[in-house]
Image 1 (tube, rainbow, N blue to C red):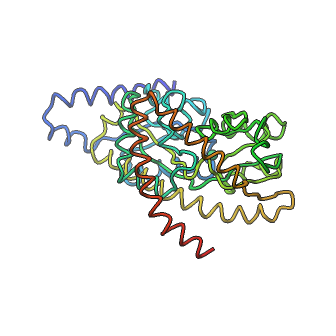
Image 2: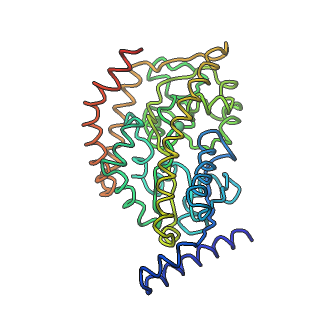
Image 3: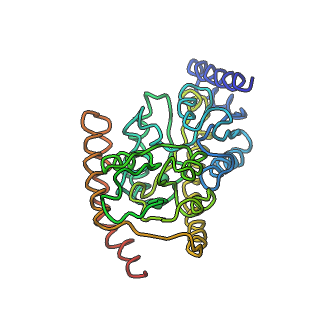
Length: 363
Ligand code: CA
């Protein structure tokens, strides 16, 4: 019943957009100025999940407040309207107007989307935003999603993640062999080539899988989220750094017809609200991780470990190979890779003498 109502509202909006093209532009703006929209957004996150999920509720609040109540979002957590990984398809088909998740969950459909979340050993939070907003990344993202009938927006970023929870020590490359780990995206492919078995699971299934031994290890996000999920109660070793996801960006996307039905000021509301969520989420994670890490370090059953350097260098070499293979034979991926890697190369020189040098000095 509810779903029909949403499709109905979207169809009506699409119809309005179609009609408007035949009218005088000025009249259309005047006619739309007072119009209100009630949209649905489907997500991959559990209800009000710290960071990732709350961000979508914050997005809805900001959009409603900054639009003076003209653009309302009804938030559907994973499974409430569609399963965790199907928000993308639902928005593409117009079952919902918007969705929120991570682009790399859809690598099966759009391999190049992985550049929009995170590439192993790739960009930091600041570099990701620099590339997206000033380096042409966002334009490429829009072009990539054009055939999917979606308009994408960066909407959140967790910052550098942790390497993950392991029930076994990782002292050498050999120790990765035969491990079954929840690790999605390109990081998962790197792990596979290193001899492990990667699996992709929604967060709701990770704890039980780790507890029952169905998986030996998991990466998720970092201390702030991981402690909420209780991974430290079912795995002993907490490894860093999160080579697989240095600063994954989350995405919001809008069904193309729904987007076209909005007047420009409400389109700006979406754009600016998503940008605000990116800043807000990073602040929430930076604060939450610092607090949660302290708690985890006081737990006698948790051992914090850094991956050995040779393991990291080995994974980095594999990551480079995998990215090059992914873009070969995919012209759009190659175009994105060219833009992404050119900026990363430039930025590494700068980051080395700024952020990196400063953090080394400050300790
Ligand atoms: Ca992760």
